[in-house]
Length: 99
Length: 305
Image 1: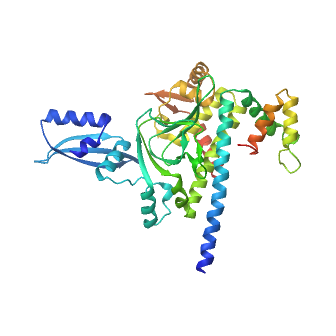
Image 2: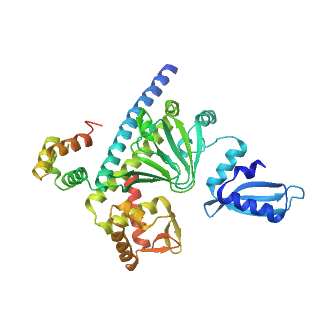
Image 3: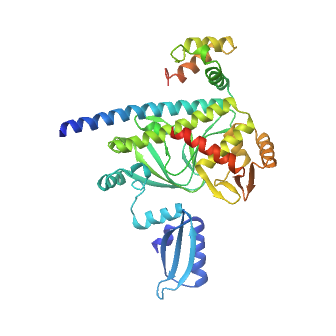
């Protein structure tokens, strides 16, 4: 019984560690988005457009399951006139592919 | 007189004045806290040491109070009283206390700067902390304002990294710090871990809300949103309306809503004209009580959901 409890505790610790890691990463990303939007940089404008697209044209960039299709999102942003490299970097960072 | 040397700033000056005016060489000081209408006030009472006559009662800030207690007793009890650790047993709290180090910052003091190696997690015990970045054109971009029980420097929890932003004390501030290598011990208790998860998740929700506002709302909407958010965190009910008990000038507000100072000043004048806000003794008040209550409740419901 004691060992089982220990294992339960260990699992809880592992779960919370994973959750905290994910939250810490998301917080860093959120602060980056806020910083870029607030300083009105080109990346900030890309990020603002992403928020608008997801909110207003969700159907356009989201798949049937509601998950954002990154390729479609990148294409839409490039079509809107943004620089391809900048858009790719922003989308990759936003979706956690790079730090 | 260790008590007096432990005091600093205004409180110290005031006490020294008392000492010389009263022409006493030695005094005894008693530090105490009083709760009035839900607010905690901290005081120091000074007595003549020989006859025990009361010389002076001085209202001091909670930050000074804690500083004095820590310095006089030589003990740092900052961590164990935090809401974050309320689920811990007494024994666990003692362990946590041993891991903590209390630090004081005067208003305007930097806590850390972008690029500094990050190896410490901070918990705000008293005061307020500003998180910000400097933009390429030298503008201060405010990312967050933190208050008691908030955590920052959390990106150091698992990895050795550099700070990605700056932090400074907005007012006299007392923080508890914990070194990165001790953090796993803090996370051993599942209830503490859950509380940390909740604190971080609330913060993330707050940022998401800010992002949406920046993308969708005009300046007036953003100003009202920021004031309501601040009212939620720092609001006090007064006969005048909900008082936002934090010192903010128009430039600070402009940095928070991402608009020019002139634009924010004009917007604030509009809002004052509409009777939605008021300014008294350099504090903002939300005067449209019904709307404020509803909006704060809505925000609270979203937060709780």
